[in-house]
Every structure is written in structure tokens, then in C-alpha cells.
Amino acid sequence: MTVRRRVVLAVGANLGDRLGTLQGCVEAIGGLPDTDVLAISPVYETAPVGGPAQPDYLNAVLVAATGLSPRDLLEAAHRIEAEFGRVRAERFGPRTLDIDIISYAAQVSSDPVLTLPHPRAHERAFVLVPWHDIDADATVRGRGPVRDLLAGLDAGGIRRRPDMVLRLPKVPPRPKVPPRPKVPPRPKTGPSAEAI
Image 1 (spheres, rainbow, N blue to C red):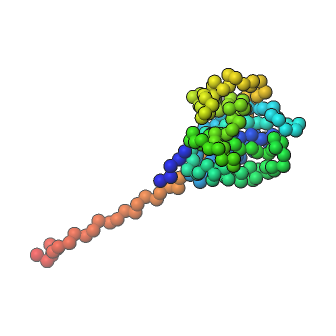
Image 2 (image 1 turned 90 degrees about the horizontal axis):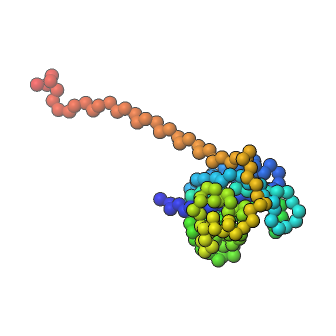
Image 3 (image 1 turned 180 degrees about the vertical axis):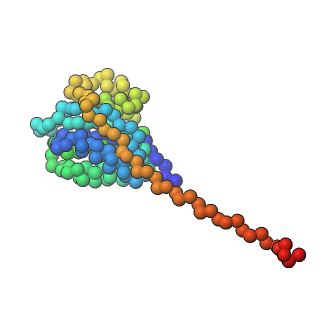
């Protein structure tokens, strides 16, 4: 049986149908092999940080359980981004979809391809605020509790959008197992009454 790990993902979009894209992203993540989305934060609208002038983002945080390795999860996230039209043309530029792995089972990695925990998560209110909403005891490994990190940040650029809600993926119904066929009782063996 595959061991599942708890992961925290930050998702964001600022082009096109932002909410529809984020919901599609949630469904796609829930459709990954051996992966379940466990919780979804409220949706926040966020002023862009860095990069060129661009529209505001919608942001949310997901908690999931996955049997995928960190690298496989990263590759899957990149595929999902590409399916929603993500083009990596400019750093901090606008995007149809952005998926960041914030933490993976409290692992620590300095791999430049996938640094864990996310190297800038501790300074991003648009990650920490929604994360705190669904896990008040969350901690960024090596940085401290999310609530303490938030106390040192300006969260004025993010606004909760109660009119926008992301829903857990629809789990397909399990196929019904047909009832076992009734087996007629075996005839008794041995001499019959007529033979006596």
C-alpha cells in the first residue's frame, strides 16, 4: 500500500476565468493518481507582487494527501498549469494558473528544482493568510508558526472574496459490487431412502 504524505499547495490565477481555472485546478489535483484534496481555503483577491503591471490574482491554499513523490507532484503540477494555458514567458508575469508546492510532509530540500519548504512562502501573506484559515497550527519548517509569520507581514493587499468558493473535487461513486450469486445447496450424498 502506498504511503500518503500531507502536502500544502498554493494556487493562483490572474488571467481569464480566474475562479473557473482554480476550480478546474482543484479537480485536476484531486484526479492525480493516489491523491486526495482534503481541505480548501477561502478565496482571496490579491494585488500582484513584483513583475510588470497586471491584473489582480485570485489565490487559495489546498491541503492534500498524496502518494506521489515530490518530483512527480511537481511534474504533475506543471502539466496541469500547461493544460490551463500557462506560459512561462516572464518571471513574476501574469499567468492563467500558478501551482506552488509550499510544503511536502515537512521535508526540507535545497534542490534548486524543488526547494522545500517553498523558499518565499514565509514572506507571502497571500499564501499564509489562506493557509492559516484551514490550519491554524500550521508551521513553515525552519521559519516558525504561520500565525507568528503573519504578525510580521502587511496583509493589506489581500481581500477575502466570500462570493467566490472553491469546492472539493467530486469523488466518482464507487462501482457497485454485484451481489454474490446464490449457489443452490449441494445434494446430500450417500444412499438414498429408496436404496435402503
